[in-house]
Image (cartoon, rainbow, N blue to C red; front, top):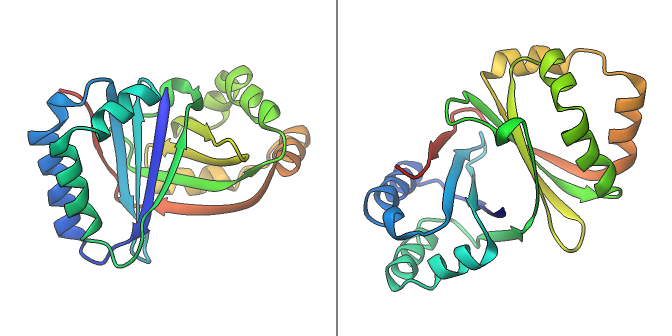
Length: 198
């Protein structure tokens, strides 16, 4: 899998959402290898889109379409400043990756000190996590060449996610997380929306 994360500040939220919906209606059918997208805004007008493709080549083929280029130019014009793009084909999926029925999504950005440790936790302890945190629907971890990462975590709803956060983690899990990640920031998408191939 290949993931591209797009971030930027946008105060024209309704226009951006409409443009995203137009992409789904008019352009998605030609995006071979596109698997789906998670979108949302933080409370301070930061927009995040996590776009999933089967491969980097599929994502590039989509970007090279003239109609995609015209759409992307319109998209850029809605933002209050420059956009950030983060690309990764080093992707780990936990519990199926999530669900388009999620009511709350948290996007984490930071640097991984020990990527293998985090990936192993996501795959080897997935069922244990599901049992302890039933509101957790799934996650994807996209690691870039320089060690920066984007983790996208889907929850049934925000209230359940906040209650789950207050649970005590086993010491070994807490210590592993603290030692494997640094400079982590959190982007809370209270009203996420999703698109996927029809």
